[in-house]
Length: 148
Length: 352
Image (cartoon, rainbow over all chains, first blue to last red; front, side, top):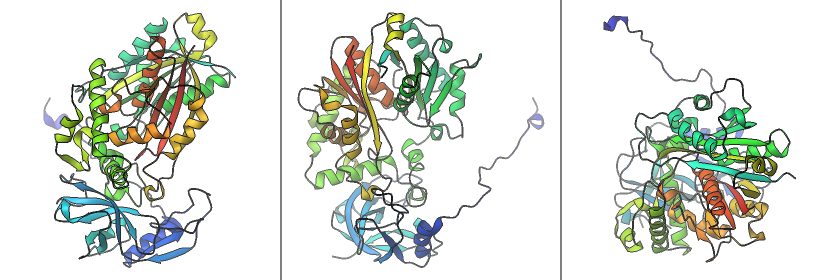
């Protein structure tokens, strides 16, 4: 069959709607745009970062926002020797659970490090802000180790 | 309350790449196997059908509907689907039978994971604002969990390697296993780190395949005249999606589900645990309160082959087979879903 007879139709998967992130997630993401990190106080008093809309234990709607530092401590980490194409870094890096100063609950993000031996539980890290911050979790372009 | 009997189970061989074989072609052979086991012709001969699969694997909304082609849905049948492992399709089917809406149910689960990059595909099922945009994959999250265990002295790398060794050795007796071999813990420890602190052998392989089961009332099982085992308890619990708020070194939801299912009400001869990573088998065994008297994952478990969306169903099936063969009197099957054992289902299966 000559090629001209093959029917073609371009298809782009996309969403024809926009969605509000709401007063809690939205507040956090807007904070990132301004290079600030905000958490929320859970029913038991713990500060949760990033903030959750409802307490997972009591189901209470949460609303008390708490500013936290963009610096904190590594609680757990995993070394990615061979980053995948979708990963945020093309160089080896660490995924980490990071408890920011002023927060009680660690968040998952990634840490820039040259070598696996540079990072350990307890390492101090600081957020590196993207050149342009737009209100996404990726406004934090990874965390950097703070000199010890 | 109506007692529930398992009367048939079959799983396909777990393979790394099913090639041109599509989902329907993976499902049909396991269905015809379970039809044969009870002596029926097709899905018209059961009252209800429930399947488990994940549209993310095929990358298309409502992809699971194509799976129904394997049943031949004309004339119309009563059919349902869970976007979960088919172990949860067992749960739905039990409710259907208990409500008196059916006396028998056919359950199947299937997953062709090989065409995509599974750990990355699953990253898109995480929190859509905080995690999915980072593309944090399932192996990395499991590695964070393992690190917490190691740091807190709750296990050692050797403990993890021993889980792998036992899985590979047990899998030698499982013709459906993808990975099997006479491998010692030392052999595992000699391997380099893959995603530190995990070695490749600590992680389940990516597999293609399907499994199917038939459950029914005891009266129906007797009518069919086939050997059966009883489901005497089933419960499932989920934890928060916020990984930072969970104690990742324990499985609180498994503990609660085990309590609800009555695991401790008798001895446990055999346990089939859906632990995609070696350290998770240790977390689960502790949460279920298993001791030396229990044979854990005699099939090799999912470290020997992980059929996404069917592995949980297969755990129940493996326990069923060991009970009807007389190898065990009472067993526990576990299924999981979500990152780092977020959601867990526990089933108790006993000799009839």
